[in-house]
Amino acid sequence: SSPSLSTAGGHDENDTQASILILKLARNLCVGSSHTQLAFLDERIVEDVVNLITWKLKDRESALPLPADKETTDPNLQDEEEKGELEDDTTLVVVTALQLLGNLCVRCERGKECVWRLCCPETLKLLSVSKEPRVVDMCCMLLH
Image 1 (cartoon, rainbow, N blue to C red):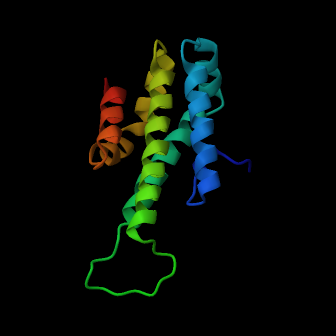
Image 2 (cartoon, rainbow, N blue to C red):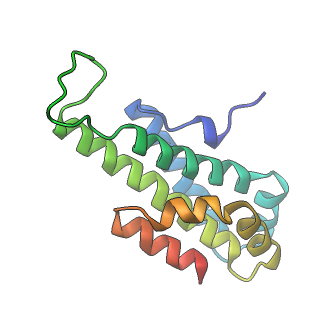
C-alpha cells in the first residue's frame, strides 16, 4: 500500500514538520480552485486527513503524563519541555488539517458532504473537547 497522510506525522520531528508542510501546501492549493478540490476528493485525500486528525488527537490523549505519585523509569516519557513541543506540533498538524478540510468545503457541495460524512460524529466529538482553543475554533469553522 502507498504511504498516506494518516501514516505520517509521528513523533519524529522531521515527519511532523513534513506533514505540516504537506498540509499547508494542500490547504493553499484548494483556495479558489474547484478543480483541485474535486481532484482531492477523487483521490480520497479527505479520508487521509480525517484519519490523521483522529490519530493525532487520540495519540495526544495517550501521551498524557502519569500522576505525580507514580514513578517510572520509562525512557520514552518526555519531560514537560519536550511534551510542550510535541503538543505544539500536534496542535499545528490538527489545525492545518482542519483548515484544509474547510477549504475543501468552500463552494463545493461534494466536499461538504464528504467532510460531514467522515467527521460526524466521532471526529467532531474529539475536536469539540480539545483543550486547545485553536482546535476548537477550527472545529467551529468546519461546522459553519
